[in-house]
Length: 124
Image (cartoon, rainbow, N blue to C red; front, side):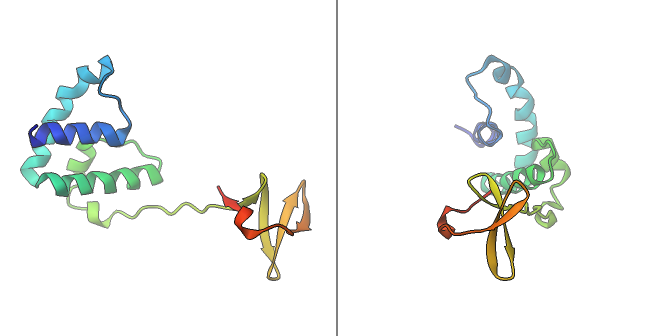
């Protein structure tokens, strides 16, 4: 398998697209052209790394992306910052807050001191 096919297949994989579906087989040649352009810029492994970085950057900012996005952002891809998502602690579906060095669980607007094990706290 040549680098163009490997690159398009990798792109489909990280997008979560199934190559077995008829719709994706129809649009496959369109991404072959983009892969050819990318391979003129660099080697397969560099493009693969940059595709991953672009994926995480775009998804953290709620943006759609494709191989053409990588072509447009080729020279600035290393400077794109992935937005850090603040995840909040929860215990059994209720929010956990820290006050005065102690943990409290917010149950229906009332703060109750957390008496459970810290390993039971999860983040979402």
